[in-house]
Image 1 (cartoon, rainbow, N blue to C red):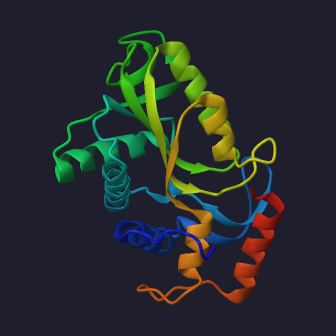
Image 2: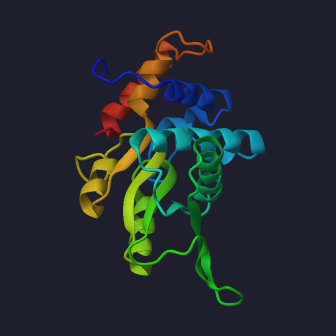
Length: 228
């Protein structure tokens, strides 16, 4: 992990924020892909105004850094992606004067009223979008999201912004992120990777929390087994 690029200030603050809010927690968990893991990222804990607002600011800062704030809409897959896309567009507007639309999908198609599969900024052929996701583990949800979007319209998916890339294998030897990038022809931009999280929390930091040697060993063993 010595070859990791230095973290930006917002990335260090983001990791501290994950720990402070216990969105990043440690113990014994089972992921959606069925893997037992010693750490878990649960963005469902962004359940109040202060937390989801801060999360949107981190996503907006990352989007600004990679230069992709000129899209038509920020798309958030239901359900956890819904508050993420709204908070991100608010932060882009309030902090960077970028007025971007937001769109999210319905789990069940609405047959009355405005109807349709999507809520928010309409998506038509040629529209550029960014997808915001909480975490990539095996990439199951993201694959479904991209396939459904492309059936709906010929949108230009400029990339996928995720909070944490767990850097785990997908269906083969590549990471789930690399597989998705290859299979779906898009780019994933994580705010941080799990390797960056481990490296940052393995050393003394400004918030005073650091991982124990036992937990570092467990996390590294997990990545040795399931990492790419």
